Image (cartoon, rainbow, N blue to C red; front, side, top):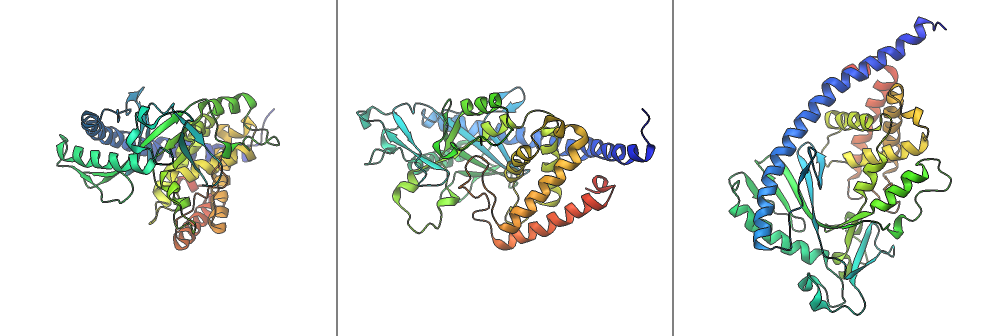
Length: 367
């Protein structure tokens, strides 16, 4: 069957623009990011070896596997997070009762003696393994490693009261976060996922996600900052991270391509003061878009333009409502701590982007 040329034309032109955007802008970003990651990880690996030499309980888990660094997360082109996986947490029970949004505590198991734990000096009088105490000790070790590192001329410890952050070559910021990996278990605060009314993800994929489990991170919780009834336990709490579970859901169709394009658009047009639109927020909105468009054919290459427009529309809606719920933990607001002015500014720029995408047939040539 012959299709009229005027119907073929616009779609073919859009596909051509998307391919060009992917080949030029996205590829340039990926090449630049890969080189930066390699340089940054070389420095961090050297420092973590020094930390391990001082304190064998902090074993470096930053290893390169098939060209990717396990535990590395890209926050922006100049900002990274390295998750340092600790071991030996078997003597603690995971307590996730919903009283601290997005957080949980690790409590010494009944009958276990504090003195038998590998982390004895970080256990509170109430029997909780303190995320804050571990982070304070780790911060001291990293500060010493900065002075001893082979890269000491280009590495500085940042004066962050609560987090372990280093600056490399006055250009890149790396946060190093101690963590525990919890495979094969699923947090109670994410028990509502997946919804029985949703047709995505497929039950087999959902089961795989739940088996992946989650990480517990030792870092400050923005959700608990400025809370009226702050307790000492909140400083001891660990942040629940479902980073790996989210990555499993990003497979199939053109999903990875859509995410790569969104990251590139963000870096070029939404990299603003106060960082209101993070890569993680775009990834979260993409997961919501997967629920809205559950059929695999809706994620084929011919629908990339529609999916990107849909996600930017969702972003505008969240910015205007000043709330972006975490995909798995809906009580956690990803905009918590962002200023209203930065959210308003991001909304204006996102509107400009969507107008360009919807009204200009050559939009991707200008992005």
